[in-house]
Length: 288
Image 1 (spheres, rainbow, N blue to C red):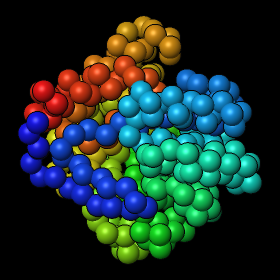
Image 2: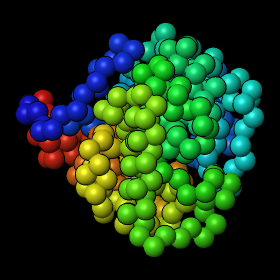
Image 3: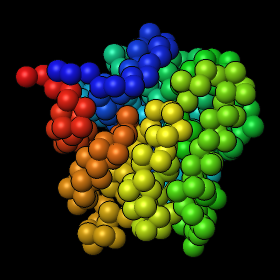
């Protein structure tokens, strides 16, 4: 095994992250009744815990727990309902699993309570813009945070999204998000960026972003890419959501070639094979 160059690393909550050596797999756990791909499947606590254990056994490095659907057209979930959905799951998983737990939320109070119950990472789809208290919360805990790009809100983001230069505009949004975290006091190396595939973007916008991942790597931050089962794959291949495995595999492999440090996926076992092959080619990372 050879180790990659330009390794970025930090530790938090007993976990060590070393970006650049290999790609991390973030497994998606939606504890919602209405997510676009798996809504309702893991709304029950027992099913959610079982699914998380299965994903870890299949190779997930991080479990990302979300209690609010962010599919196009979705409505916000009240704070108390989101807390009710995610806190029992986070608390149990933090005790039972040996991998870090991420909480997919833009609400500072959800983030705070999840971190107090053992969460390790905050995944904010609004890039720290959705709640003015979020930068202060992540800085106070010193936890890693994913700053994602979104144009609009989940309710309206796919209503004719337009850009003059999608790569430049998304890149600037992410740069500003990084600075929000740093200004609040979070170490820069703990800010992960995500260009937000499918969040206020057309098929062409998504393709342009995936073609330009090295532009985002130029910001100097770890890069997360989430393409799993998304509608642009369905539109290109003319396939429903549960038949997009191979399309997802292509986007995951090419994202790694473009510099992705974390890939966020539903089908962990299958994507683990994709990640292992891509890492062997791109980073020389393999066990011979």
